[in-house]
Length: 567
Image (tube, rainbow, N blue to C red; front, side, top):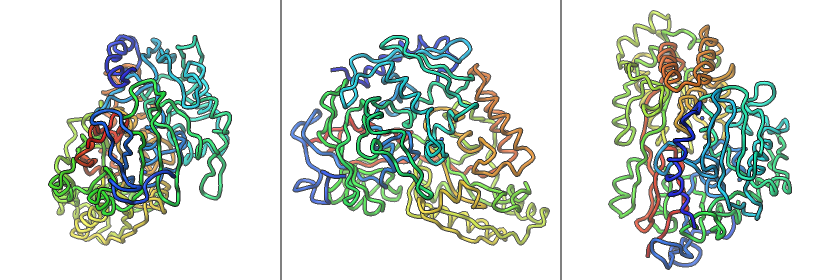
């Protein structure tokens, strides 16, 4: 059998040649456990083989339930954590890194104008239902993504596709042609720095055309403010990955996947992979300590030392995120005054915030992307913590008595925001110290917070982003693209200049020139100050001492296939 990860690394030599003339070389169940003991009954089970395949069951504590098993209609990490084990993409991500590597495509090359891309495909690969993976299957997926009904085109449904490709006359996608059985040619409508690396995102996983047709994959419907997903997305997700979907026990809170013994690469190390949904972080830690799960994501940094002392492995990811405090003048016109925004930023003691509220290795953010992304501007100085200047600016703005609603989320832990309450408390104290009256507004993460924050209902709120790929556009466009973006920039006279700058940088085919454009754009954004970037944090994932083969991903893009359980 082929080891897909070794094959992917080896394939980068071919990829490098293919990219020499490319335009671009580079955004929260059944059969599982019931909480029993890890070595008895229905809990996590040990395997008989050490460091290889076994009949073991690996149980991972998930912070939330997946919204669907069709990643095309998802935008949350808990869904993608599951679907990444079922599906694969044309382009993968290197283990433990952020760079693209071959996955279902062995190589790809772009035309000189950056509009036509040729993908050479893996051979002898089949979907879980026995359908052959080939160029026709690839094109069927591109056509499926583009052919959405009204519900599918809702920004809350196919979130990533709407942002990355769009529909209608402005769509980035033009066509896909099966040149031969193992060669697909994709044409886009304009050069863009995001293509083809955008295809590494979980939303662009490749599905079985047979299963999509049989179970009406595009049959999404609206229901009130939510969606009703078709049978494909709830019961029949079908990819090429190392695990197949077995069941979802909604009442019991478990998703169960089974090893794909016909997988084209090395089979998974465990027979079953169970995601046990445990929303409370303290409860996840207690279950790990009790042995009923083998690991969980985003342990609170205050628990890292104790978890390691107990014999667990705390795997710390490299920071690839940003925590920010957004200002939205549509929700509160007081924020239209740049002196008010500057004052609120100068009032925050970010050095103390990073040292006291975030894990070791966290750093102060100077802009809305981490320093590992091309386009990061090293010349931008951090906003100085200066309470006296903050008071002066508020006085000059006629807002010495400023009162503002400050939103923060509950019932959530995010890679960039391990404890939202404590971060809120720190900023609240800093603002009150310069005379600002802070009105607290808390909402459950999935119960009104995200909708309120992104729909211009919150004047000031905490949010962040973990990059999906190593691309400046993946950060900046996620925040600022469009007339209805979450920062409400349409209220400012520089909004059109911002949109033009984003389009110009993304459409620049020359990599070096594009990097310079993003550096300039980052400088402009920090001068305009639509929000206050706060920090970059190294989130962790924790697993038990007998878990082997887990590689932490900066993108939180962990692959469970190589994981085994020792005796």
